[in-house]
Length: 370
Image (tube, rainbow, N blue to C red; front, side):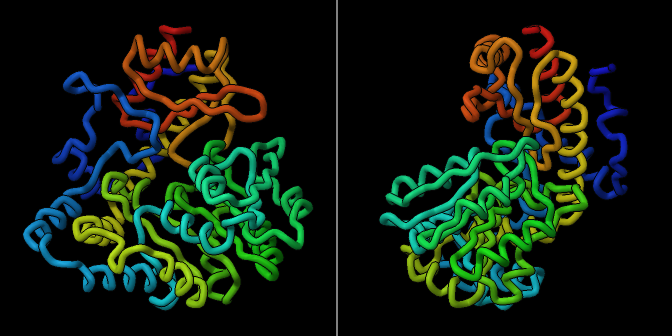
């Protein structure tokens, strides 16, 4: 099985428009982070291709107005999101990444002993925050396909369950659940409690089963959908995200926010420009999918046990010879940063998808380590 990440294979199946190709050539998107002696960062699930020219121009144009509160711009971004999602503006709350959206949801529905149901494993940020505010966290193991086990979760719900958290695609497994089954699960559970669906990686999914739970918000269900500009949109450093829910829920969440303008001006204008830059989004999605498709056979040939079917911008695998040892070798010998996880009694490596050059370096390092 060929494992070399040559350019032809990298771009196979990813037909780029002339404009997108010109963008790539003109801007040299995301040169390897090894430049200048920096480590290759494959540990935070960021967009390695950076921001587009459109976003950079928007940020530059907004700098001079940084002395003014961006209330009008905040409303414009909220209206833009609402229009695309076919909900009213009163259904959208903006904040610092999707972490603020789920933090607000936890404060309202999961604090001080309230029962919160979540998968094991799932996004550690949600788990940690729920524990910090003394929520009663109930964990349900993923199924044998490493997917969130909706049937098992339904059985663990009690009359005391106040909030159900679903990360889809799930982090750190990268798997998604069937959209129709997730819709039915959320509809059933939302009759008696609030369901929070974390769709941070939604725009990266190319599986036909992808369904956003925003459609349940339109029906008035007790569902909150959390999204972020930190992943495919490439704005992790500017911290912009949002929640979508029916107006009554959004009103409760806004009441808990500590500031009247929760996002800074540069983040707002960058998010608006990125949201409208469909070609940069498509290019990032295509390259991410190509990186996943190429790395899987590399891991298999080297004897590592990868969780199949990732629909996010990362792959988790159990390393042959020990995950923690491999992580240490990648860091110390090859200056490549990846992430360690512990679940199901095993240590795992989660590697984010990087640029062509970064992934070539990763493959070379994995082969050298053996």
